[in-house]
Image 1 (cartoon, rainbow, N blue to C red):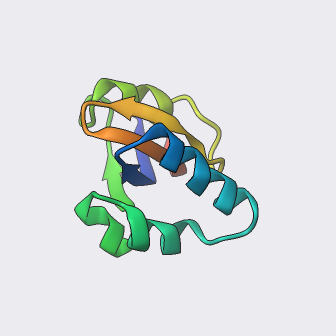
Image 2: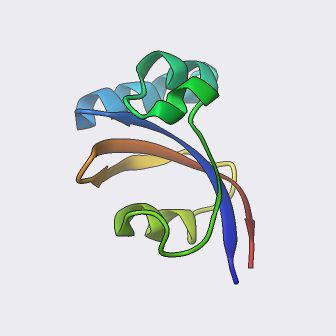
Image 3: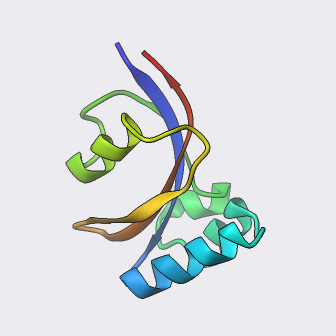
Length: 93
């Protein structure tokens, strides 16, 4: 069964999500921004969600995590919780 590890940053608006993505592209550390801005408790761990399998996360999240290139920041991804920046850190099939 597929397993993946990912980290994310959860914010309320698409605009804020895009602004943070630009900061990451300009060299700001993903983990630092997660700690400062993420509304998810995982922000305290730099956005780390640990390892999980298909179906354990909300559908929109799941789709990205099991299809996106590893190490490339994806988003904004909208879920019922808000807007996410998402990075797959590891995946095994």
